[in-house]
Length: 221
Ligand code: CA
Image 1 (cartoon, helix red, strand yellow):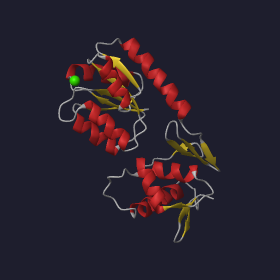
Image 2 (tube, protein in one colour; image 1 turned 45 degrees about the vertical axis):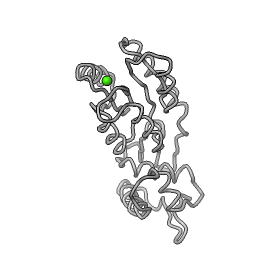
Image 3 (cartoon, protein in one colour; image 1 turned 90 degrees about the horizontal axis):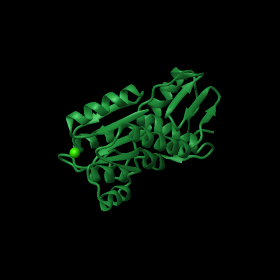
């Protein structure tokens, strides 16, 4: 499970990093809001631990941008701001839970567990087609039980096509599913992604999963 840790205090960040890694989280760390946004653009996370008082870009702004871009990561806000108004602002901006500093690691563990339970319950169901298996809860794809390494965008493309199984998805609809509205990329990027995804699937022994409907789009029949 991949987690982004956003905290500008080096001492607290180091402590959290050690604690989270020991619990099996795959952790990226950001010491300011701008670095956090760059990570959130580049990767898909299951969880974000987010401080509010951050250099460069404030935590609430990071949160609002993550949600604007359609990011589905669970966000646990860690903040020394203990007023009800702060809590409300963080939850309004798309935070899932709020923990006031200083906190105990036991409390953190139980909040993380509760959020992951909600996250797993909300994930769409697993999809299996022949040897291919895609699990939205863990964002893992396997072929005949062996993991298939996909980039985040390739994964999202496959997930979108499988969720729409039997229906043609236009290039524009796929583009909307994968990119935020301010993206500079053109929807031609979908053609490129379809071809890299097809190549990876073919190397793993899955041929002809994605069909092209010339002039319309793509489908998994
Ligand atoms: Ca801070």
